[in-house]
Image (cartoon, rainbow over all chains, first blue to last red; front, side):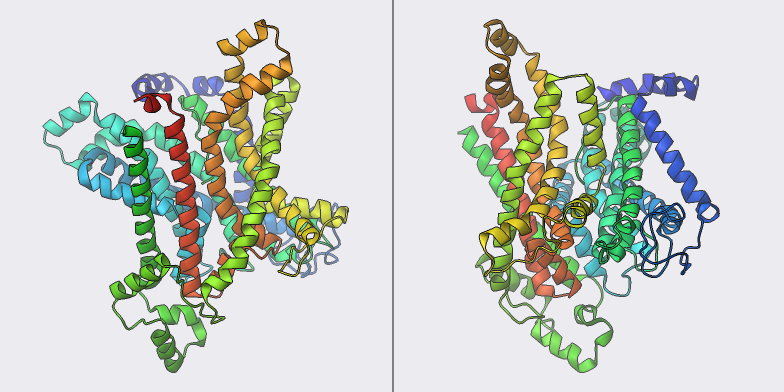
Length: 297
Length: 316
């Protein structure tokens, strides 16, 4: 039913963006505002941060919360607030590129498999289900272990792992959408024109599945920072001295009894980003007319 | 008849998935390009130690022989020997799984009231400030990674109010009270994460049920509000929540990995992380396969539950 509404929606979008934004629920606006702040911090980070990324001796180590050091100072004398700001663009870039890659790969697999159908679809289905059956964090850790020590700690590996975790889950959604769209007349017409599966997928099915995939992207992007943070926190993600938030929490955890804020600070930054992404996705899904599916992975 | 065929089909499909998962795990770890032995040893590798390790892992045999031998071992309960400690993996697993099952059970007991009570309050006070406030709290908690929730609990109950231990180390000699104290913070963390996912759905289900005809009927008959809510509305609202409970069970398998690590609780999750850190190949293969098997079993149970609860299928 979403799909039949889609052409009408594109027409309504044509007059002006303002009209859509006026229709958007409050959560969309609050989420967008939080995300704009995060994006601004990510871009302007180096100019906003009071101290350098690895500058030592900025204050008394582990002195706790103060006006000069809102998130405290770690045992090396680095200002955690500055490090959180410097880390912002790393977290955002890793999350967005990993999610983007995963959604792209998953869409192609899912749309093609759903359109082609038959035994190919059956085999793809079984394989995807098998990958999904490995809990996502376990799958991520497994992939990192398999990649070996040479790649460990590289941003590329983190991006690939996020994509690997998301692609099969996105493919499942994309396949369902493709099966629905494949029954419609314009797809039959395209097939009768003699177009191949790839071209039908790209030119007929993909444009009609775009709203589903957009919400899927937003939903996955909302969880990606947590996944990346979890990997960093467990010591399988980025390596020190990268100011990735999960990793910073792990680094300062040993001294949590003396200075809790150095652990909580980066965590709050992470949580506020995810709150923003979740509100935005919720609003976006309602705007497009889909209820946001909620799940943990 | 159809019912048995449906359920039987689901079971066969799950077994097939498990088989594919086992091949996948083996392929990812042992067949991917690059020498397994040098990946395990990293920088400390010398040609002699590499040759020794290869012989120990039978790496000179063809991959398919190794896979079938491993699969046969797993199927008959012989999980092999751990590389780092040279102990049988079954022996290592046993206490860890016991600890995690205990923790998961404790977390589930806490999860039920944590999900039910806020949902009931929200449904009764629909669209009032209480409802909105609880929705906001749920949303914020939903956006918090489990290791942040764990950290906040740790700061509250260990640093600020020193009630509980920061490190949840237990072993066979620990008393029940020690176990209870050690498990409380990890269990609360897991319960909060699971409850947050269930509350939203349970609230919406309850509201839907509360506006249904039979609930209005019960109200018109003059039953007390509490009775209508607990005896008529709640049981019907719980059915669709079955699915989220299965999802939560699936979350638990990943969740214990992080939460056990945060509190240094010696369970299955921290064993998995340790085996990955030590690059103990046989132990990694065993733990990951078990994690996947539990996940598949949880989904299978949810599917069977859904089939049994679907009246259209029951009738035929």
